[in-house]
Image 1 (cartoon, rainbow, N blue to C red):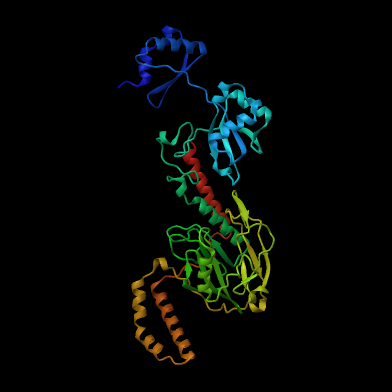
Image 2 (cartoon, helix red, strand yellow):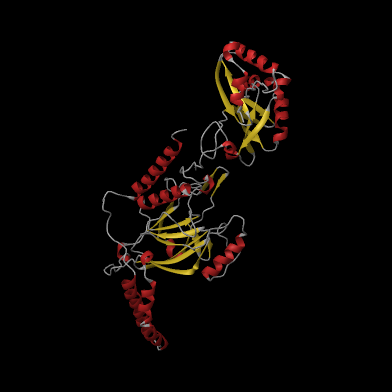
Length: 480
């Protein structure tokens, strides 16, 4: 079957007709675009084709009208009646009825959409657009809406190329975050950026314990964090709360029963002090009373509905330590003081400073930091005994079970004969020694020590990841 371009060249001879043609290009729906040298040549070509309409039908493409951005449009005015309101309240911009009939609402920018106002893109005739620019703003109900030119770029959201749409694209899929071959809404690079920024904040500010909500998770795990961090969270598909202990001198006591998808609670010991660290994420769509009952079960204490964290200074003998450093939640849809920090009465005297740092968190929620003043004499801890870190990814569990089963009966007999606390303590030490010896024989140790390159840091590690992502993005889109 002959293509439209070949058919056009067989039916028409520019040398014979004395017409200049710049280019002939095929487009979709069995159509071609012919670019003539002048308007006179275009008229000759159309007359020639109209004389023999059996094969081709000529049409002059209509020029696209310019588009304008209208800000602060009240949401009370619907899109269907917006043009009528503009015409009635702004008669000075009207050029003619024919020009106005070409006006139409293109779309609404969701990124700039708020509770009471929105930003609308409208297509105007060039004459009306000129009058709107001369006025500078449009009167829409009770608002004076600022206007500016808006350029609509024809871009493909599948390959990130231009001059075609996704339904016409034949290129490979490309993500606009990392340039990988996957959809952009399923890309984890954006969340990885927030994780990398969080690591930089922890390292640069020497944070000991971090309570993180809504972290980036993948298949029930939190990727991206260094292996030296002690991370406590529930291994569910959705993780809303987690606790990270960065200081290796802090002893941690964790119970899996105190971990849920939206809560995490651990016990830590540092020197002469013992603390309970608790992080809870309140779901916006869930009744707060249900969350308070769940917290009550964790704290094993009575709850009074009038003692709410948001309305009272203390709850379950907890004191809110938030200070006026600004709002903790900042987004396009609004700001609020939604993040609350509370401590017990015995810890209240140790809190020295609560503040919101200036560094970025790459999230709608700002970073919150508070310091605890602990005397050097109370920080003393026995660090003489070396702690072994086992690499559980290269374990031999069969050997581990066989080593433990050899002394299983003896330990069970000693547990049954325990009558005094001292005897129980000795029995626990025997169990600990048994597990340690079995692990040393069946599980290799993690490599300890400094990096081979002493100047390498977490910041350089994150920058290298960003560089690799930028290189892949350039390689994918360099030919566009």
